[in-house]
Amino acid sequence: MNEIIQMPARESAGLTAAEAHRFSAVEIRQRVNLVQEVMQGIMKRETHYGTIPGTQKPTLYKPGAEVLCVTFRVAQEYRIEDLSGPGVARYRVTCVGRHQMTGVALGEGVGECSSSEEKYKWRGVICKAELDATPENLRRKKYYKNGNTADQIRTEPADLANTILKMACKRAMIAMTLNVTAASDIFTQDIEDLPEELRPQEQAQAQSQKAAQVHHDPALSAHWITQAETAITPDALTEVWKAGVAVINDAKDTTAYDLFKAAVVACGVKLKATEEAKPESEDVADQQPEPPPADEEVEFEEVPE
Image (cartoon, rainbow, N blue to C red; front, side):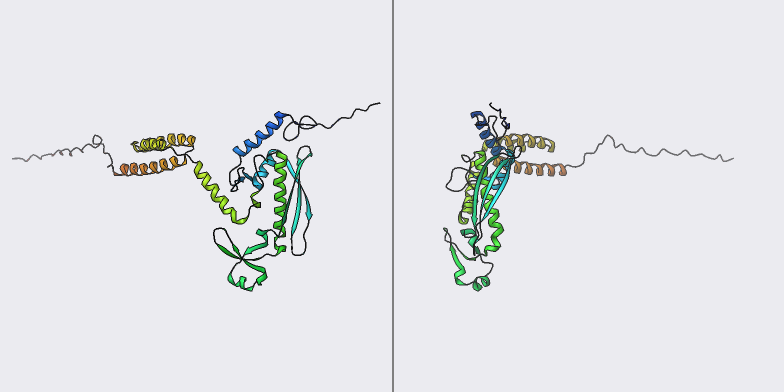
């Protein structure tokens, strides 16, 4: 006799499908749309993600991975493997993403970090005395592409053990987030994999890209500057300021905003000076001259003849 086995129900929203064996095309599209909406509406460039020089896709940072995990209700579960040896701190971490409502394992990511990596193996010297006191086989001169140099000495692995472990967990978490949310086509791996000498270039490129994206309309700023200059009272200038800011904010023209703000401030100073220079108006009609005092009556005494 055949037995009927009831399969556990799966949540229809988020990362678990309504059907037990597959996601529909609509559900996949909804997931991708949600990632893009979170990226555009909540995440901030250089805070949640950035761009590495030479790459096209943004790089996902740990704060951005945390936002995606909160969005999809993904809890992290870590499995740590200690691979440390004499003079080396090394950890391999597996991060398992589980759905907070059902406990279903959605995916995992692996991250590893070691004190033998270039950025952890050496550090800059504090002073020349520290450099002189360090044996020659434990110090070096670091050369950079721009021609600069820096004196460095070897680090103590024990001092970096906690940092190494946290970095391994961080890499594993970001890898898990990309796998679970299927966001690898949108983001790349974390910027921590980038060499130190390239990080200032990454920041400079991001700033230049941000500056290049700013669009300025000279006609827009000129129009509202003219409106501010033609205002004859402080109240009129305030109304021009409110209307101009609303229009410029809609255009997202930061340059026009700065120019308009400077013009309004200058006009406000002029109007204030004009108001203070005006003499106080005197109401002549209200100031009537005081009537002269009435002649006092004088009584004359009759003198008998």
